[in-house]
Image (cartoon, rainbow, N blue to C red; front, side, top):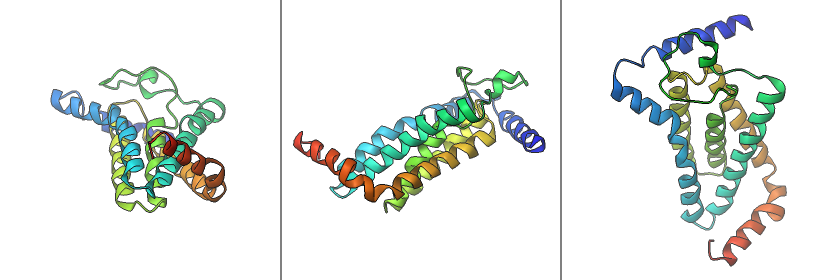
Length: 193
């Protein structure tokens, strides 16, 4: 395990070494690492209003994201393995963005995005799922470069997100009459479906 953590640390340092040279590059990486996740509500709304049949997919993606983050990431970070942020370890990283010194493993940004990507892929929206996979990877790599996550945190976030989406997808048959259909009916009553 120690050799994996050493490799994790070396990759982080190499990735972080590319910042601090060009202001424009730091700004772009910071934007990708922090703000790309704000596309999530836009994507979910677009999927909801795309077609009647896509509404169930939007709900599944939403619940997959909620199972991944905050539920699973909170449980893992607070009860299984609390790992401090890399900048807390004071290992000489260049800090490009401000982040509070909370848990690092797993990445909640990446867990949420990976859950949405997997859920939309499993719902048959492969093109959207592919774009979300790309957004997940770009966000994860950006978060390593700016020094708020170790690479292992990103891998853990992907695993949590995929697991959450698989569980929600497997429970889809059971959840449809008790959760998905009532939500769709309620939204139709208030003219949002």
